[in-house]
Image (cartoon, rainbow, N blue to C red; front, side, top):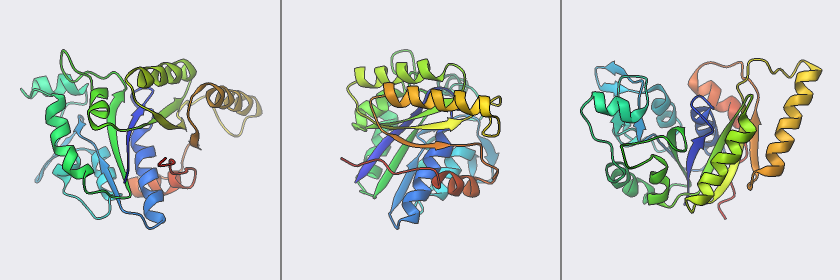
Length: 237
């Protein structure tokens, strides 16, 4: 079994895009997959209950297909930090409540299981615990999604240092082009883009698993497939 925790340098770094892209790549190679989003805010009401677009994207790339509640056991409507959304719903988020349902799913031993966090590495769950503690509880190596924008080098290096300080291995990182000002079409922007990537590759203590350009697709399945074209699976060892 290969299982990893996916975190980002910040909110909207592209964690779901990369997670679903890695799952799509694994499925393309005939592997069994599972994507988990233990806690999600910004959910919409449906006849089946609250549903989160990111969790649905991970569910769609999981094979065999799991139940939604297994993928996303804690779903909240407000699009705010999970601990604040949980407080509004009068729910106490805690590491035990997230880790307990995840353990039997990890025990299914699918070829690739990815557990996607929320926001960055130090997103709080409550007054004492952070969501990063879930990766520690489950003993998962980490894949870092770097949103390629101004300030990303410092954010990425600080996150990598925090992951190491928590006793976990950084298994790889993925660059995701999110800065509107950068374009592959402009020579000056491309030079800056390549310089940033070179600095990240030199200073992050893990291999680069891919760099995602801005993608033309918009449907989740098409986005996952397009991202998969730019990715490599992490080395299980």
